[in-house]
Length: 373
Ligand SMILES: Cc1ncc(COP(=O)(O)O)c(C=O)c1O
Image (tube, rainbow, N blue to C red; front, side):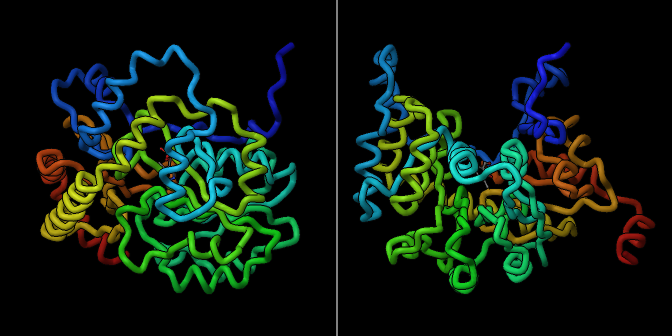
């Protein structure tokens, strides 16, 4: 007799993270490996962060502050919001899970786009939610179709803005129009993990909340632009009522003390952040230009990654891996023949392009086939 698992888990695919560099080296017996698979920041965090972590390392015998006091105060001052409007998570990932635990009961409906960040699907199914999947249109959210799918059982709509894996974003006007037609009983969850890389007509989600919208939450993370992915810290901002409910299902010490110190220090080094964002934007342009020269189709991205079609070839990620370049194969997202590549340092991007060129030239007849499609 087995210990019977929660029946909701039966159909849940396990999340497969990007292969770590050390594991790839071990498995493939490679000396040099470049990882461009997990949308990480290729740079070490600001020197202020490293100094702060060293300073506090000896204090980790103590539990962390449960309410992230100093960080909370700093973010609230910067955003001009009350402290009751923010919650911290072990990565912004955790806020997704908290929202589902707090608001979704067995059989409730959760709307997601497709393809999208896989955690929405995995965690919604684990809660026993009924997933309503609305495929993207022209590589972005089909907001009209999403509106039509809202029913009295709809609890949450997850919108990754900018979207992962596509890299596209919904601008301010589209978000405003969309929100006008969403009933107040539905929580709209804007996941803004790549916010710092987005262009200027990106929505100011905070303003909706300040103007009193109670059915919106948006999340941000220190994992991407701030280069703290390994420490796991992110946050969500919403009405006091939403946050209060999320606080009830949060573990008291979900954000470790080094992460709290590091995030605060990272926020204080605006010059470093600007430099990183500019670098990534520049390298993204370089990659676009190089991909144009090779003749590959890609989607223009508002993030630190690019999704690229390698059709008719469907195994490019595994061929690149053999050459020591880890990128994300998009089969798990139902996009066979696509890869997602994070923007790295110039030498990493060059390593990727070199490996790609070595395997790319497809035979002329393959090109012909592609054009016909
Ligand atoms: C859309 C999106 N949301 C959230 C996350 C998770 O970020 P965090 O490291 O803050 O948990 C990611 C990470 O890749 C992401 O792509």
